[in-house]
Image: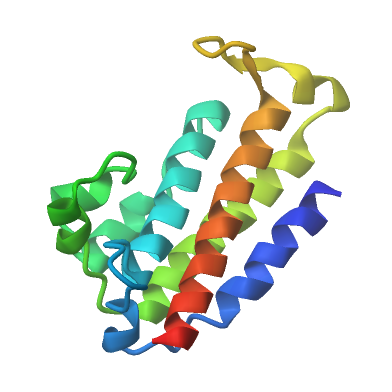
Length: 158
């Protein structure tokens, strides 16, 4: 069931691989989050959080030199100021989409490796209620899906 949940995001993602630079730069109204930032953030938040709960290295390590977003590209994007959002300007939609795709597929692979009991493990006790593995995995895929939908809408509207 979780793999099916992720497959919907993978299908959405494929539609974004051929975006041009002006589409990556597109925003909606006065909102600063442009399509390129939304795609980058969709991958980074998933990659960082998956690495945290799985112990696997971040996929970003292989993509950072290619996308060349500097030290800011190594962050997750939560709390970015408008200037920081503006500084994240990916120029290669195909590579960015490949990164997010690998993050989604790594999430599916990790989820399918889990035992039924491990879904209930607490992975973050700094929240009330504490966050289980299931809650975290659903949250990161949901966040990704929302940002992909935003990117699709803006790119189509731009």
